[in-house]
Figure 1 (cartoon, one colour):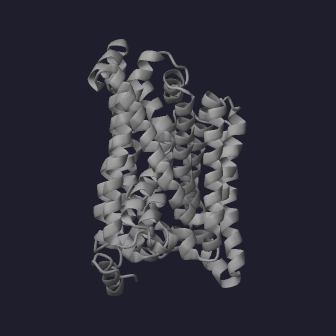
Figure 2: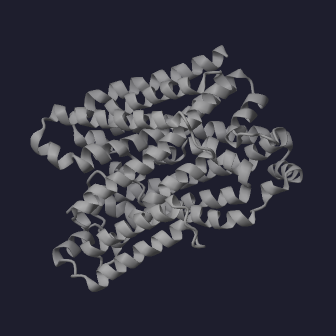
Figure 3: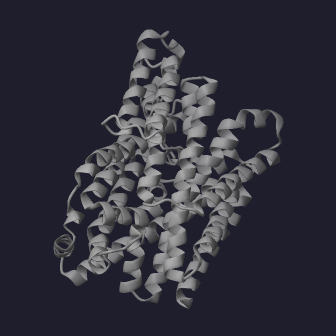
Length: 481
């Protein structure tokens, strides 16, 4: 156990050290804190984007979901994210980078100026991302317990304090530096584990064949899962272009072309990791541990049973890397939703730069501590839990963002109605357990699109000035309004 502890402590210490080092530069500058000075290159941003999306859910949750629900349902869910990357590259990357602000709320509040937009969007972000963070903390807790013997609650507290510390004081620069290391570590561990297991089995087809012979449900899509799988696919495909922690990565890019290329390269890296996890590690886990009570434990049991102490230590660090690389981005997005989106205009008029910096730090701590509290009683099946939260953002933000950039008839009444209709419908259907047949996300996006169309067709046309400014965002050269 000593080797594993040393590797994990070195990793956690390095993360805090990066945050402390970055803090000397970022705390006095909004550009540095929120978007790393807008100078992140393509290669670095590629790995940072991949790491931001490839969460503890992508290592712990995706394998647990495949173990319990089958490989087809899992690939359907995560294929949506793979499709979402090129959609983001085509539909929003250059335009939002040229917009040149900090958050998705900045764009929506500019495009559809209304107090409803300025307040509701950050509230949706905080709600959805707090659920996402809770899922990541569970992944950290069960990993530390399974491979290090650390009690679940203790592991939660340690992991939470580490990532809150380096995010709150180091901002986007600290997140970027840590995410690059974390992304490389995740890819190496997941793909390396998969290759080792395939080497022992002879081929991935032999491994999958043996596993599906033992558990035929692993290779089938159950009838009751078809609707859910379609819904999850749509959620992730529509989330990537508007999900706030990915959009903030777009704002960090040097220019629009770099943002587009980074998204496409991140899609390739993410795809390799998910396929390695689902097609190699899960089948071996099903063979070796066919009756796990806690499906999210499958990766940890495989590592524990198949590899020596050094690899187990690296695996713990990799899962923590997956947790932190997403959680830090989520936490910064929540912090920006509070300190920048909700309170920004008021604070900038009345507060000093030092006070603004303290508010940014305090916002990160507030969200992190609340998530820690709720994670002490964690949900089952991480992927399903946090996908529901992401669905709220997809339902509310996708149509207004895309229409606001691409539809000339989009206007303020339509944008506000679209946001409220999409998010409101999703909350009613999912929160109230209402089953109308199609997945809730399909109905919610339809309601959002109908509201946008009604506002655009029957409301007052948008001003010529606004249309010209939005048109300028599509140019190669930045056209910041």
